[in-house]
Length: 190
Image (spheres, rainbow, N blue to C red):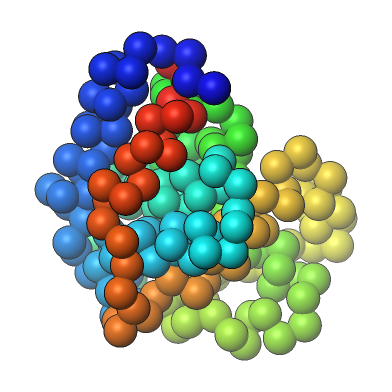
């Protein structure tokens, strides 16, 4: 349930949507879609699959760190891990609870976990995702995989990750940002 005034919640979402409109048209790190298109596709996939509202929100917001970290778009090409998941989680924690923020924080670890535990997962990653994986530490060790799986929001992070991996089609038709407004407003917390 929303714990702040509706007007303020709308203002929070207005600010987030402004970021998408101002910076989200940039290419999505070597993928055939823009940042905004990627996040909209991923969220639409989550919604179509019947994901929980917090997972849909997290999926829509998961790469927001790329829009606010202030690093060059080609940072990965220069061997820089932008830690976008941490940037997004810290930035969004002002307004959303752990059911949204933690899957975002963990979605990179979820990729590393799936590479370590799911046969064939690594082979299905896009070249851009393989490059970022190398910068993010590669597949988790067995011990780190077990530790990840025990985290409270690990399952939601893996779910988000799967929508993230699928949301990269240049031909996909997605809803607009406004389609997701009511769901986001409903879970803004502060």
